[in-house]
Image 1 (tube, rainbow, N blue to C red):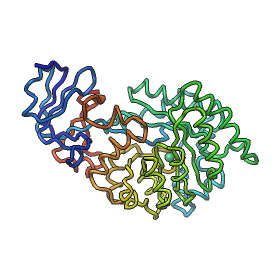
Image 2: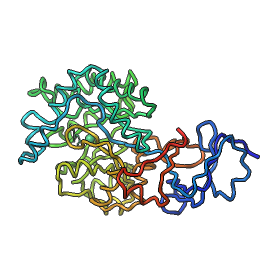
Image 3: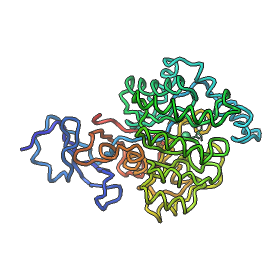
Image 4: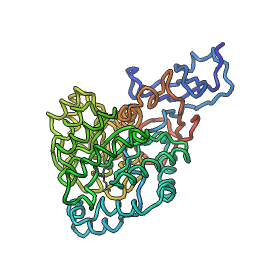
Length: 399
Ligand code: NIG
Ligand code: FE
């Protein structure tokens, strides 16, 4: 007999591994856990050799790994509901940004907020994600845009992890927008990012990755390249808000740096996708931002499939273009708007989201050696997870 802490039996086990079945399914499956790690998976019929301290009978219901939201701006000050009204009246996202609203209005509110206020405001957003089974979340800075405020945001993200028990992966997004004090000195701000903000964030171990907004209203390809070169000097992996509103070949650029993910990517072309394939860069789809901006250009899903690119799905939770923490709704939207299959959607918030965060050896799958964070869903068919948009919530079996 092998001893284990927990044995789950009779599960529709969604392992998210490559076992040849859809979503890595083991029907009538079992999983054994010890010391918060998965030590075995197999069929319920073959688990008789375990002597478990406790047992859960899943009664044929779906069991999945905990979910991962791999792209959020969960920490921010203020609110931008007024911009929604402006957009309804005909203004677009770029008009609002160029008029000094948009990201810069959140920058003002975030700079004014204390770290405690930022954490407190983010707490219900984090708790809502957790209620959907999320246990790993990426959080970006990008509303501070100076050394102290960027670091304040990253520290707030770390505090949020302590308060909630979430695993938080932090991303430095100082190159999100040009701060007002550098309005006429773009090169000066890029210098500040490369020579002060990235080095400090790296030295203090506050950032797991570096991101930028490569766009007409953000930063040019050349500026983004400088930011990525600085990240590389400090040993930090990169990812990018790429080709969201236009095609600047941002996805290709981030792939040239071996990037973890290219995100948004509505306007990405095949030349960039070939580079993503070479670098094994994940395509992170953000269907809620697509919807909220009433974008019509869809990401080139068929080309991602053709080149074997792994696709992740995230909320992009932010106060301007994605006021949501409903990750399960984003799964549904990735299917209805972008044409993903149920399997692609599920892998997008498990295995592939883990890969976008460089955590794919520990999270996002139910397999030997992985962290044992398991969810029991009140459903028997995994399609219901995608279909019900957050109306059927999981129970956490083990954290
Ligand atoms: O991912 N595209 C740029 N950044 C965010 C929006 C941030 C904002 O508008 O506050 C995004 O959509
Ligand atoms: Fe974003």
